[in-house]
Length: 83
Image 1 (tube, helix red, strand yellow):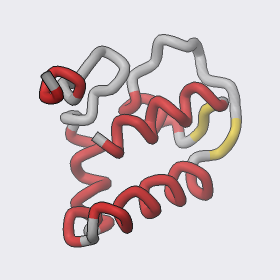
Image 2 (cartoon, helix red, strand yellow; image 1 turned 180 degrees about the vertical axis):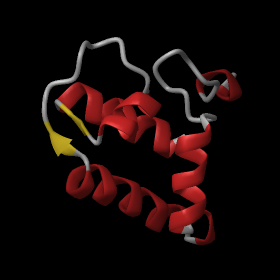
Image 3 (tube, one colour; image 1 turned 180 degrees about the horizontal axis):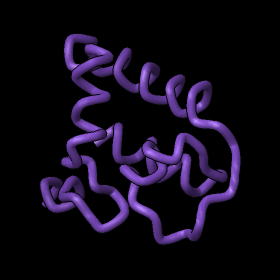
Image 4 (cartoon, one colour; image 1 turned 90 degrees about the vertical axis):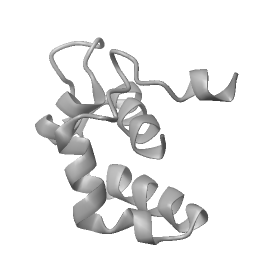
């Protein structure tokens, strides 16, 4: 059952090229699981600006491309990165 919870969804498109490239370029897979969580959280908090996107139904990859998002969109990106 747990594998079902980690499948991509329309919003949590963590298999997108942009998200996978970010993870690879930052070297997050070389970190411990705990350090990965902190790195992803810090990235979203510090590098994704607060702002309003075109809508709420945006996938994480679009939030990453925009470079900004309000609370729920930043959370969507964080959730995708954590998966």
